[in-house]
Length: 305
Image (cartoon, rainbow, N blue to C red; front, side, top):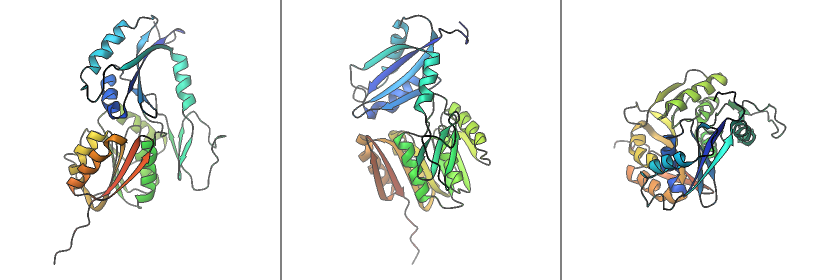
């Protein structure tokens, strides 16, 4: 079967899970779907969708076996059994059309995020004089900016970032927050992600927006980086944020801020406690549906007597 085959289809796997298991399920399915996963928020559950290799056959036995193997590694207290999983063949042309139909220009304060295929000015979004436009090609594996956690980070950056600030984007994905930081006046930005594909997508989006001088690196930890950052923004899983709190404290200048997002509601106390135990102060939380963001401050140095 070739790429031009009109019957080319992908096997869509939809795993229904509680918000606390979303990151673990996403990571497990990424082993089967290197193009990435799509996360759909619901009120009480999250649906993680992954697409397996193209096929013309309505035979899900192999997919069921593969999915069962990768999900078996997730503890039962995190992903209760039985797991609700759906399988469907999706024509490639319909998949691409549906994905693009879902992505529209969006505004968060002064920031407007627009997919490359949408016109600007947009018939669905009135432009403003002070708009800062970010144009991205998210592909089907990375965010288009409309997730509540991304929006929370965009709000926080607009509130906290001062001209010339040094910003570290921890878990940069498609690069939206990296580009936003530079457009808002950051002097230095470092973008890191554990996924090499994310770094390449971010690099392409930086070039698309003519944003230069940004360092990108494949890293899964803050350990080993140089310090002195004014802002660290982490739109990443709650367990990773909890583990990263001491390293973020070491890397921030006195008075620097740690912006944490990607936190399911039931994880908020775990993160808040990790931040308190590390010594962060002035913890401020914001809830959007099932997601929570936290802004924490590193204490100012106490002057010697």
